Length: 361
Image 1: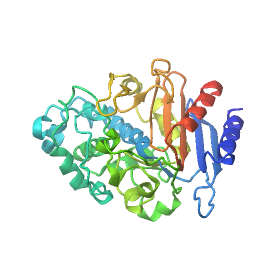
Image 2 (image 1 turned 60 degrees about the vertical axis):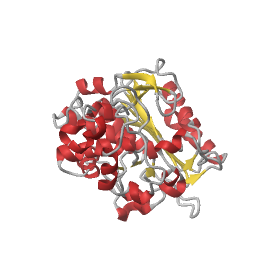
Image 3 (image 1 turned 180 degrees about the vertical axis):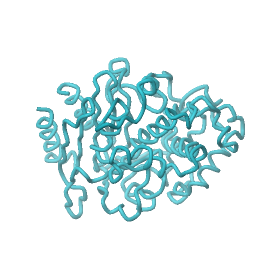
Image 4 (image 1 turned 90 degrees about the horizontal axis):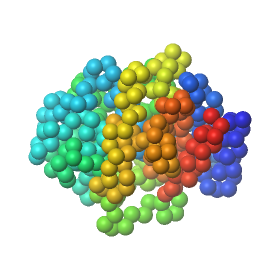
């Protein structure tokens, strides 16, 4: 029933023109119960979406980076309450010495912004970006408020990972998360250049990319790195480590979230104790960048997209600009993901899918 309802919804969304290409996947108690595709991966060639077509999902990739941090914390490699400067001394400049790894995961280090002239090439320069962030003056006292770290989240968490493991974040993710899940070809923090052609091609809905001067969005994602189709289709961006973003198939993302909840084909990414920490809110505050209510665990937004966090307090996940989304519910054992290539300013598709999943799964 769930597979049929989701397929009907996907076919309707594509048939109406609301979506171009779409993937939906659902896991329940470690077993896949729905895997839906519809439409085309490339609006020019008409290449169809398959279950194995990866999508660039912008900030939905933050959920992948956060999962890696918790896998390492569960093994004792990473201490969430340690100051970032213990492993990355340069980060302590300008009063950031007390900021912790947990502050990084909760967007609380006080360095959400980027220079207005930052370019895609800058964003792809790992060492340059980390030096820029380490040398930044915080907008507020670290640990005393949250504000959306659109890009800096990924470089901060990713550099911490590199410092404690000795390997780049994309490789650490591939080794510690994607490989155990047998999802190495569908779950990435940067796609190998030879595989970029497998990805779905993104397209903007008219008006999607608009950001008027003075918009807080431009303070954290300036014009040169706005999450548009032109930006998200660039081979250098897709193959670089920009771990505030990522690439996934819906079935691989749902599988990863399911493996945070419990075993999936014998693989469990984290312990039950770690799951409780990962899914428990530690921040309920006003976001200092956008002014919205932010309810966060260490690495995830709490509450299913489109619902009040108080109504779905056991759900954790992350959404991406343009409409991608993935999450899990610690109470029901259900995880689901939505990937799409028509970039929209709202999350209507993911919210519609979430309502169907909640009703049927």
